Length: 144
Image (cartoon, rainbow, N blue to C red; front, side, top):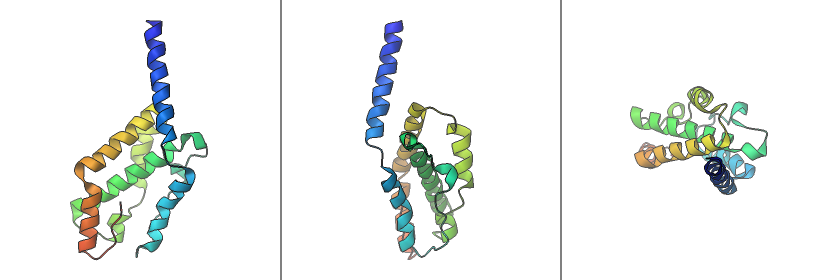
């Protein structure tokens, strides 16, 4: 029983370590905001402080918070059929609520799994490509 538990813990730790190795760096995360500078939406919100973790080991917090925000924003654009600055770059309130409710005290394994689930939700619904097409059709630059 103990051997099985230790094996499970080892596999979980190795999986989390491998996943962290392919996570974006802090510099890459900073680039996320830079595309907004090329957009006509000058008042687009930057990544808030609550979504940034000072401990570089846990930059999965940043990645997950940003992914939740993007998925929610893109889903709103598609649902409303409007690619305006307000729908494309909403406030971070809903993303913050979901992040705090579901992941604020989660361990690294849960955060990595959640990031995968949110990425899969985006891919399965093709929301990024639908948002880009809608924004392009409305003469706005659509990015995920």
